[in-house]
Length: 171
Image 1 (tube, rainbow, N blue to C red):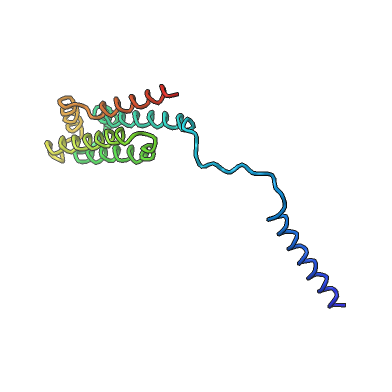
Image 2 (cartoon, helix red, strand yellow; image 1 turned 180 degrees about the vertical axis):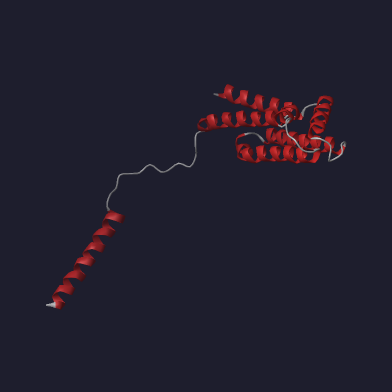
């Protein structure tokens, strides 16, 4: 009797495998629409516009006068404020690095140039002062230097706005 039961189980398993194979490979199926990896161009427009908005906000936030105004009440020394400002710029950039996939290489280059120039301006202002002087002296020096130079952040904003407006016209 054990032989008969094991034979029945074996035959059932073979029939199951045959039926599963038939339904998997040979049974006529409805034609499935292939999955398309291409995404229509306009699907990214809202994301791209949002990226332009965020990057313009980034440029506004690291404009020397705006940056200094956010930290003007800081106590401490010139070197303390210098590190704080450079850290704020780095954090702002790190928060927005992924946005570069939505903007042109030219716009991203303007943006990184602006970031580098603002950082250099802060360092240059700090070098003209003694590290232990009050932080307010650095704030004043940064604004003084920023007024005397052309603003790379405003140029980056112009490029970003132009690209965003071109994107809106394409729609």
